[in-house]
Length: 355
Image 1 (cartoon, rainbow, N blue to C red):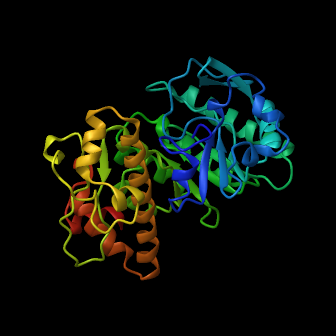
Image 2: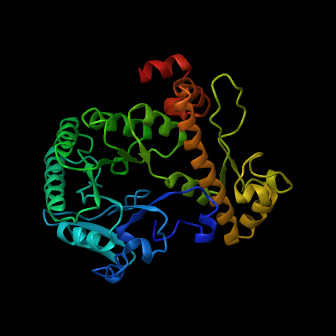
């Protein structure tokens, strides 16, 4: 996020059960050092988000833009003011000033297609060296998550995971957006890294936002996911309607509805019956269709308030199914119904994939 959740004001956000937020450094680099690092109260107070856990990263977890190149000394970051260079020393200095709860270490993420083995090895080495530098300089009380790299090279993913796990980090980040492949292929590569990370520390994954891939990611041991999926669907005019129901309960609900579709012009129902979000409690599909057609900003505000609320409810239902020991069957039922074409399969095939 850029200091606020996309499409929402602080008042909107308070109606949604959010307790943690991701912050991106590249959106604050209108100057170096960022002006906000001079604010004495830290990033929580600067953003008026003192009630939230704040997780910082260098690059946007929802969109990894192509950059020119990185070197042993710095990474290139795309900002509103053009491409800027950030060193590990500068990044740690900014984090010490911001004082977030958690931040991801600086990493040499590759945005080129088909990089050579030499380039991937260099990426792993740089990222590990910067992690060591970060751990030496960060002040006490701020938790550092190590970024696991290795791109599409299996041996390097193993080396990166093992070496990062040997450091005194609080958790791990796997950024799938540096892999220009399908979500299924992305998860397959992430598995290689996950198999070499300890299970007693949290693992964050970027690039697995669709609900069916969230479920598959949980099976593989991923604990935390980015929430770019609701904002992506909001930008498309989609309202999320999928349901995670206990196994055996018939589910005929669509994955989402496209409120640009003319059929919703006179549909005076809420987005999703039973939903407790502000949009569903106060407005109709027809009204949001009208707002989209009129290009009114309120359309995305209402859609995002619903989509984020619904997405978080999905995770609440996941935790409930885990506590009830019904997660496996419930997830398989969901995937068999909503899975995209590359994982569309019956329950027997899903069980074979997972186990």
